[in-house]
Image (cartoon, rainbow, N blue to C red; front, side, top):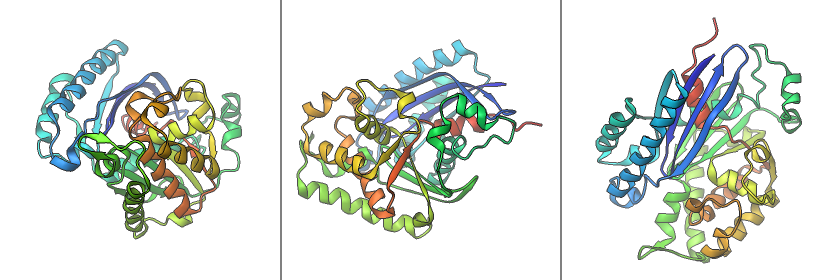
Length: 336
C-alpha cells in the first residue's frame, strides 16, 4: 500500500486527492478529495498572462493543501498543471510559488499527457482492470457492478475543463488522444463577457458563436482521433458532473450518486437549454450548483451536448474519477 497525494491545477479549479493505492488489487482508497475554484486562467485567453489575483488565490489553496498532505503523511506528491499555465507568459512565477509552498515543481504537462492521465483515472474501474486479483463480485458488493453492465469498447473519454477539452479513444490503453482549446471558462470569456459582465442569458448569436468554435475544434479532433469508432462516451470534470447532478434532480451534490450514472442525450439537451436560457440568479439557486460554475456552466453544457450530437452518443457515463486519479496512479509502483 502506498499513500500518495495528487494535485491537479486547471484553468478553473485546483483539486487535491490523498489516497492509499494498492497495486495488488488495483484499488484506490480516498482519504481526502477536495476542490477549490481559483480561476487561475482568468483573462489568459485575452492577455496571455496569469493575473496577480489569480495567482494569489491559487497559492492560498496550495497552502491549505500543503497542510493536509502533511497531516495525512503522504509518501509521494505530484502536482500537475494544465491549460492555463501552458498558455501563460509568466508561468515561471507560478512554478516558483508552487515550489516554495509544496516543495515540488508543478509539471506543466502537454495536452496529450493530460489526456492519458484522464483516461487512466476514468476507465480503470470501467474497463474491469482487476487483473491484480480484485474480483467482479467485489465490485458488485460495492454497488458499482450494475452501472457498469453493458458498456462497450472502445471508450471515448471526454474531459471538459476550463480552458481545454481532452478527447481520448482506447480500450485498456490509449489508442488516440487530442486536446483542443475549447473549455467552459475560455468559451465564456471569449463569447459571453462584455464590459466585464457575463451576458445573462446569452442570446442566440452568442450561443451560435460558441457552438461554431466547438464544431471547429471537433473537426480538428477528428483528424487524429476516431470519435465515431467509440461505443461508450465517458464524461469527466465539473461541467459534466454538474449536468448529471441537475439531471438526477439531486437536492445536494452527491458524488456517489453521480459516479457512473448514465445520463441520456435527452437529459443533456434539457439541462443545456435550461442553463443557456436562465439568469445568473436562477442558475445560482440550483442546489447542486457550485458558486464558481454559475457563469460557465452554460458553455460547459453546450460543449457536452455538441460532442454528443457529433458522435451520435445516446448517453454519457459520468465519472467522478478523472485526471486526478490518473495522477495518483502514476505515483504507484507496479506490483512485483
